[in-house]
Length: 341
Ligand code: KG4
Ligand code: ZN
Image 1 (cartoon, helix red, strand yellow):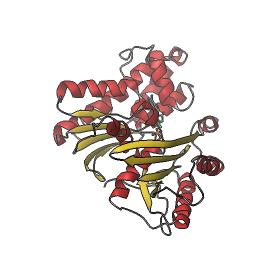
Image 2 (cartoon, protein in one colour):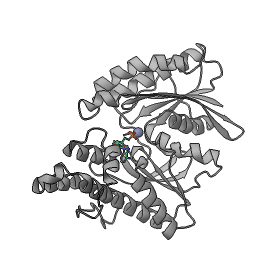
Image 3 (cartoon, helix red, strand yellow):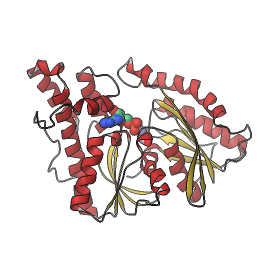
């Protein structure tokens, strides 16, 4: 089965062609146009600007995908239908609907968060070590921080989520406080390498709260209060970055381990843009190995942690196999699309 996958939910335009054959996955095309340089000017993503950039990028990208104008060789089209920024989502969704209608191909509406989760399947299929169900999923991106129980393909239960900022958003906001630029995650984690994670005792929000929720806005405020009291740390940011990162990692790992001890999964899946964070990956993996050695741990290839269309194609593939198609005449982009209630 060959899938054309389209992603435009935020600030990356992406088109991929993936093929499944004899249980193997082949990524035939993986095209990505990032808008980071443009949104840097504003310190964050501006939806209207994102939409305009998607419009400019998406059609040349479709040409570059190598698919002919009749869609020959394509078995289904998968598109991110939500969650995300409406003006941005609509560019990919309207293109996918039009192609599905003209080419008479089945259309799959993919949840962007499910796409992030399926990013781990790329490596897992290649190595024949697929996650086993039930799996606890820690999904950490710029817009979402959720703990989910994945009972089977496409079957999710929400265990907990952030009550305010997402983990990636916290990295971005703290980087902004420190004038380090956007996006914050990569630069904070790089700066943190030269710092002491125990130098500043930032709070571990929601620790011992008795549920599986997160909160990061208080941590951001704690960084601001620290900087006001210690202005020299504005220029000397390594210890602030390392201590802030450690607080985020501790919060995420603490709640994930609690979810594991309550729900007894066979696998743990880490995904989303923040899963590129080396401290998070290694801390979660080593604690799981120590405390739950029988559970398998899965994180995406570093090339698939951020937004991309390969992950949308992978999630779309599983839905296409179950014939979970949508009507191209009625599909609408849903900014609040949920994976589970
Ligand atoms: O999943 P993603 O590419 O887009 C959304 O769906 O939101 O995630 C982007 C987020 C940004 O907030 C970025 O700062 C964060 O992922 N991020 C990181 C790292 N790389 C990207 N956060 C922490 N450490 C990193 N190395
Ligand atoms: Zn994302």
